[in-house]
Image 1: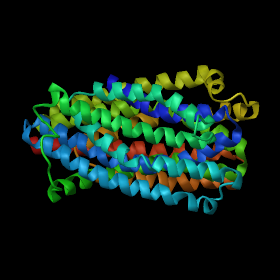
Image 2 (image 1 turned 90 degrees about the vertical axis):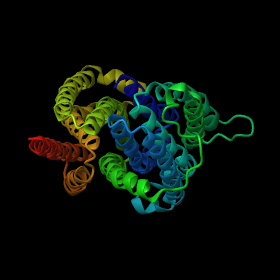
Image 3 (image 1 turned 180 degrees about the vertical axis):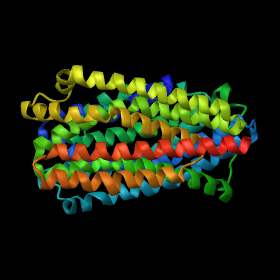
Image 4 (image 1 turned 135 degrees about the horizontal axis):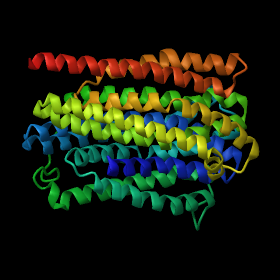
Length: 433
């Protein structure tokens, strides 16, 4: 889990650095980033989430000792990743035309639109990198991915400065420059990881780049059957968080900026249970391949206990260090005061969030992805979204109404996913007997 956690923090750090650097330009730049990221993030996570299917498939083949399949799974994953990446990139190119329909204020449109156009150019690199990452981590080699992510994080700051403030022939693009910087980095990360995998000795038992392999309909079907529900489940969860910025945009840029800061803080902290969930997917996937149900249940129980401990730690961190955290993002007093209040709601859902994402990680390892997709859709879009909109727009609650909706949705998802995990374990142990 530890190297995966560092990787997740590094990748989430891209958005964090963009938000902090935009926040020090102006409230308009910060609000433009909030709206653009609110649309880019769900599409990016849907596309890269589909490629998470590579992890349980490789882990199962690894556990079952069918090493000859692993290279083929990775090659087919790269085909799927390239096609999905191109589609996602095209969607982001047309997305700016819909911003006025979402009620985004006119002052935010130029920068938010340019950001979306720029970041769309990096989408094929994002999805192909996700496929290679899943292959490497499922084989028990998360550290190369971690190293590349950390180097990229360091490079993002000078790249952002170049595109935000201009340098030589490159014009000053403000917060929209973050989109160009991130796109360039995504391609550099893909090239670096692919080069390392092709040369490093640890991958030679299951090589990927030894020969050309045409698209195989069987593996494409398996990857999409497993991956599409994973991507949609992540999309349903993340989009409910991201679209909150758009729901709140009529309440003014101070509210949107405060919401963006609070959301950015919780996004960073979410990387802890998310990394645990990925580690659980790999471990559960290996025991699932071995058909070792007792060890698989032990790993699940340990994962949920660890999730609880981490959630209590993040709640304490938010409670004790709210002023210091907010000071990193903004020196605007009005934005800071609203954020102080919103972070209390973020603290309230840490436990539920940790339990639901851990349960989802275990279910992915057991290759059960259809039911979690329907559970997350129901919890977030049938329950959380309408509750959040109603409370934010039609009561005195304002921005906090959206957060109450999120807490309700996460609680429902948590109960349903844990129930699903319990019933799956019960079914497998009955089959054993």
